[in-house]
Length: 638
Image 1 (cartoon, one colour):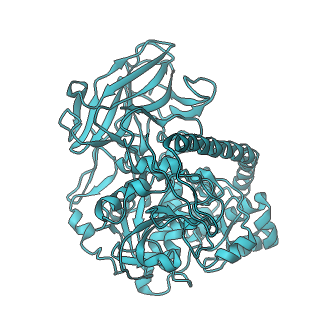
Image 2 (cartoon, helix red, strand yellow):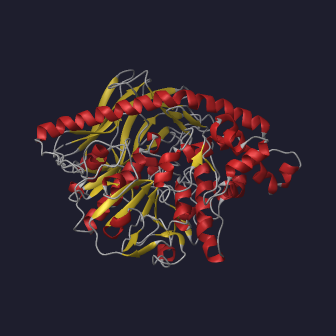
Image 3 (tube, one colour):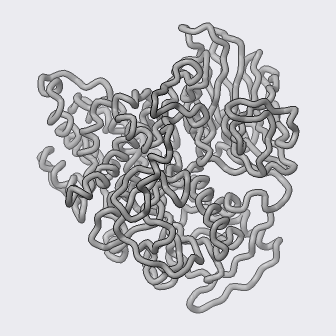
């Protein structure tokens, strides 16, 4: 792929233009350096994450009111299981922009505009705030004590000594536990409530999907979403109803129905959801009118802008819900146009495109700002879903505003500090502007990968690996039974990264299929890519392209296929039979209509210039035996 040559400018030097060959060599070197950092980070965090599992067990023993899995999910939502110890010097230099600092593996706040969870948790434990900040075990126990108090305050059964069994029932307690700023006035209450609702939803979502990645383990536990939120909230949150058999058990009322492609609850009257989203009112959770896939939650911090000439990439130094809350009420008048969630790429817009958000100082009037959930020193936040969702948003900007060109995005090595880039670079980081102290998105942001997502198919040939499973499960971060379209297998089935069996590199995706003994249905497994949401998947260019992967079936009778999200719906491929106990490369041409059948809303052919991979389908006649299937190097070839 031909990448744009980038000119870096600093206060004392101007970099030289380099040849395409040198640029390609630099890209390879950048990728290798980033992978080395990621490997080192994983090795460093493994012992911490292993110790955390013991601390969680201790906390559940001490506070049995808390449903098992909840603490792991909170730690995942707040810190990705990393012991946060903010640098006081860095905090002092960047305090004006970032949300309140969080501490320990549970990400407890210590005031500064949010609740002082550290001090209150320490009081409940009889410990000092400093120990709760610094001691990971006490940090977990303090979080458990705070949550236990909230659960007991509104659950009579708990006060009588009985245990809560279902995590859905503690949704109100989770919202109060979140620690965000309290509502300042009645008009602000609904908006602030949305941030707390988002936090509770994220905690339940982590349990619903389960997490088993790089030492982080959140037990998978199906969530009964309709027991936790009302229908209107579920639409706003884009909540998954994937535990339902959408073919036979469709939820449908006069106002709501299940979308069989994304398997989320949809409002049948979208005009009702967008009617009030004019950009300046106290609306919350409605559809954005600037960017269709986004939710709209207003921030009060914005002013008139003069032009559009660039896009600024930020890392929030905080969670998704916390960032939304902070942009609604903070003493520094900071905001950004959009906030993106790490786990699934959900987008919330907070300032209309036509207004200037307060995110990059003297450059506010000419740049659109995107905050990405997470912390610069933990690469776990920069997920495939986040990169894809963010790139889709920026491609929308490039198509809408002539002064912003995706081909002029930065495509060089990641930086640790402030490195000022030329004004000719249209898409770059907060750290790349003049007059800045912030250093986000930092050393772990993969600019080469991001550039390729902004400019799909730019090279006109070659192979693009969508998922290699070397560092993570990539797009395939849900279990085989997560889709309501899956039949025949039990919820004990799993999908996880393994480094013992692989075709290329060091690792692959292991899909363990277990029969559902209560069903005689044949196995049809919709192994979702990007959790089934088209916005979370990488764009695939149709022209001359084929999509394929390496697959190893540990048993006979298996066949595979693909689902592709096209402009008119979703198409399913014809199937390919697999030989047992050997690696096979399977692929499907995007231009051959004979290889595709209509599924949901489709026409039996790939017609759009750019499409998305919906799922890998796995098929077998019903059997009582377990079957392992390994998938490696999911790719598109031009």
